[in-house]
Length: 159
Image 1 (spheres, rainbow, N blue to C red):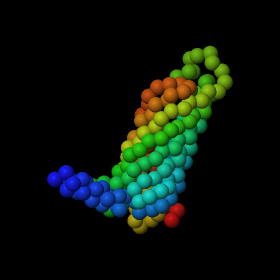
Image 2: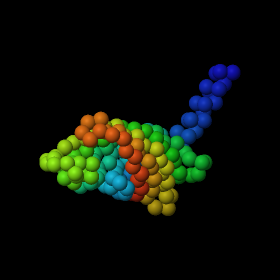
Image 3: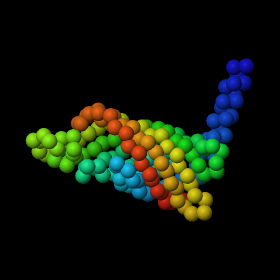
Image 4: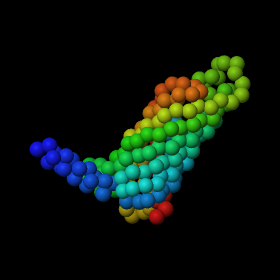
């Protein structure tokens, strides 16, 4: 019975993986608390890497994430995804609300972990994807703490 359960689970996840994506690389814009550029590249049928370069409180944030994708709700072109990675931020003390009341001058950096959970839809008629996600993050260095961002991403599919 245990072998049958393992085999059934493998077949279900294999089915999802085969339908996980319908493009290889996409580049676009991301809006939200962190707004900027995004590029996603699939390294396999169901696994992708995403890079984001965004602005935040007049600073710059660079994030890299590894993501797993699977078909959502048996809807063609609609996928859910989850994953995680790291982010690095560069800020000026006077432009950040959490330090604006201090007398600090100069620049500082942050380094931390970032997660992602979202839905993405590939429009068949045109080479565009639209995604909505939640990205919780935790800064380990710099201004330490936990925060959550939601974002909307539009990407042009390159291939």
